[in-house]
Image 1 (cartoon, rainbow, N blue to C red):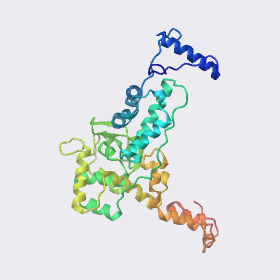
Image 2 (image 1 turned 90 degrees about the vertical axis):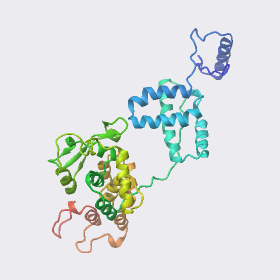
Image 3 (image 1 turned 30 degrees about the vertical axis):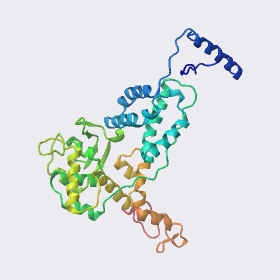
Image 4 (image 1 turned 30 degrees about the horizontal axis):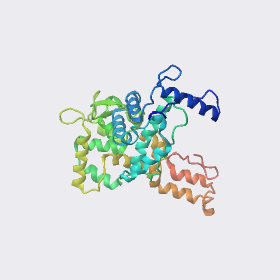
Length: 366
């Protein structure tokens, strides 16, 4: 450090004594105003300076607009006020821990702090890679948080909801409950994405409210969801060739605020407990899990990038968990009628539709 500026230079010889001697020479040159090795010393970028560069050159080209707004808000409101004046190479693990403690003192939840730390970690990664900073990147340790609470409706509540709404909004709610599609995916659904022959919906678009344009769905994953009889009949009644499937009275696509208001009106009318439009997606996944559908199948239908997100629905499948525990009971080890291995009972319990019937003298096959 000299005159509140930090200079970095590798010592020609790899020893402490040589490094200290080399440092003394450099300090002497700098104090006289000489450039080191005839080159101007470039001052290291502060976090505030690099954050703007990182946002313009990484976040904007690689993230959707909603993610850009979220990261820009986190940088401006939380990270730059704390780390802004620090040079990127001087940010340490201690600084990160100080920020975590300060954020909690100001009332931020651990989940909110984790969201901010994720942005900070990615920004630091890019800084060490782009600027070739020496040393190891400071460790950014996230808080351990309980899994998020999910609200899902019972079968009776779904029936009450659908029986008290009609028109296009009812059709959109039915589609959400039977396919698990996100609100933006339903509002942006195109007739060209309906496969009438295979009776399936291809999720390849999501409607962006701010830009009023179609973009790829979350995680940029295209997925195919089979339609049940009710959904197929509902869509077939007003089949079209192209354009949006769901349009408001002015023949324009729905915006998110309007469908949310419609849902609130129905909820107040029926007296149902408080839930959001995304709860319809949770309901779809929870009902599948309760009926014993494997979680990796639920993951594919929901379009989750990892099974971790889908595991939040594991607790609503008590029948599958009970069958697993029963496997440990010696009394359950053999079938009382045909002396079949208990694994066949497990298969018949969870997937009866794919178990082939055989003679009592043969082994049951799945």
